[in-house]
Image 1 (cartoon, one colour):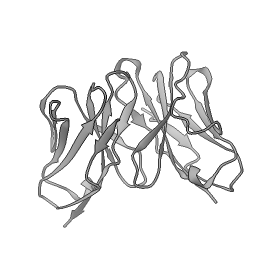
Image 2 (tube, one colour):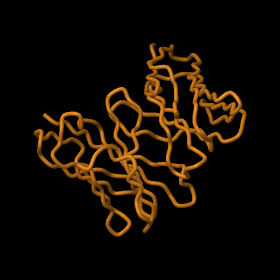
Image 3 (cartoon, helix red, strand yellow):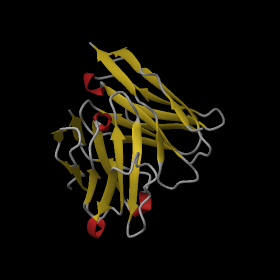
Image 4 (tube, one colour):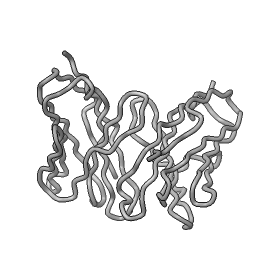
Length: 114
Length: 111
């Protein structure tokens, strides 16, 4: 079946502009995660959605970052007033409810802020 | 604090065996994961250990010692396609979903 998809695959933006990154999880998966991966670094947790529960936003690095998940499916990560330090690969993952520890990752969006 | 340590880079020869170590210090423990990530691609799930011992899955095996805060991933009969980064991650017992990730070990396979 279809895996997790993300768009765009690459995004180059100017400092100060807003960007939106999209994630389509695997159908039926209730949990959705956003991570950030900088070059040579581990995955940095950003935000977690589980069904209709309030999201865990504890990993968002600043109030310039926000995310929403509409209808329990597609999610959008928005970064406002981008900074050069926001340059990274943004990964989305989803999990089935009964095996929340198995995370299926999308291919990521490579964001470059110039 | 929470910390996961892995070697930054390792090199091995095609057909050989390599062991990638991971040590962790976390406030709780509820499972350890290994993921493979090829350059420019998403991480893919390899293994999950929650009890001590060795879990074998084809050419890949993963070992866990909870008392030592230690795990390793063993790759046998190395193939060129095994060149990738290998990420170790620990699930905290206080969180059902959050994983603490190591920086990954870049494995280079030479002919």
